[in-house]
Amino acid sequence: MKIRDIKELLNAEVLCCDEELEKEVNSACGSDMMSDVLAYVKDQAVLLTGLLNPQVIRTAEMMDMVCIVFVRSKKPTKEMVELAKQLDIVVLATNLRMYEACGRLYSKGLGTLKENGEA
Amino acid sequence: MSEAINFHYVVDGDDFTSAGEASVDIKRKLRQLGVDPAIIRRVSIAMYEGEVNMVIHAEGGTVDVNVYEDKIEMILSDEGPGIANVELAMKAGFSTAPDYVRSLGFGAGMGLPNMKSYTDGMEIDTKIGVGTTITMVVNLK
Image 1 (tube, rainbow over the protein chains, first blue to last red):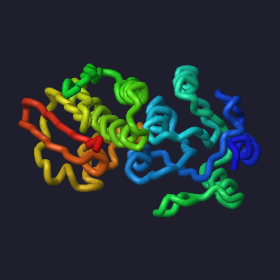
Image 2 (image 1 turned 90 degrees about the horizontal axis):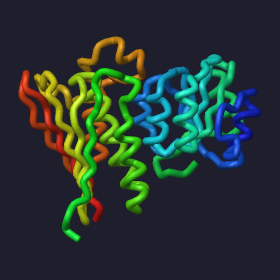
Image 3 (image 1 turned 45 degrees about the vertical axis):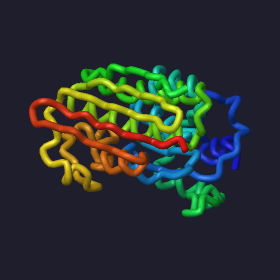
Image 4 (image 1 turned 180 degrees about the vertical axis):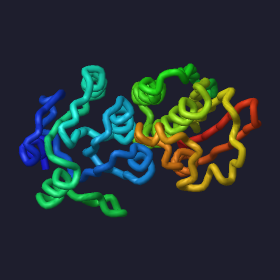
């Protein structure tokens, strides 16, 4: 799936790095707890979250993620978007709630990685 | 060649919004040095957890990252309250972080265990009322 597909499936607004929309991603995770993202996520390229602070961007960067989706109509601050831009992380914002946003992506084939790293 | 490259950071403990800045920077530096991306990820996650811990529990501190030919060493020092029970603190899910920290997305009690799992060696030197120094090593070979 391309980041552009995520944008369309979630009716999301692109807040930065729209030149990266053609990038391929093959897994995602949804969490408001960055602690859990850091502990349990392996090679997930996309982070869906309702948490709104700069640590979301930094956590994604630590995990080599390429796209963050803010759910529940959360809009990141200018500083957060600027930070994401510097790190080449696409930021999307959707009105959908976490459950539906994850469900739409999952049903279209964006899963989680298996233990062996395959999508 | 045996001389280490050192990066030194002062972690500001007053402002949670800046927590993680040093780890973002070290990631950039290690990329510039051409370190293997899988190694960079392990180093930066471990340091990030440590950096966030420092801000939550110890009002900041310092981080020194030494890049050797065969390993990367991270030394995180603070003058915080110290860790009362290291064995307990190493248990996944155990946390003494206040509730407001959880609303910031942290404090799940995964920091120290995660730091250990992402590194090849970790030592905790802590004294109540004096501070904590955590040394972590990730091997390059």
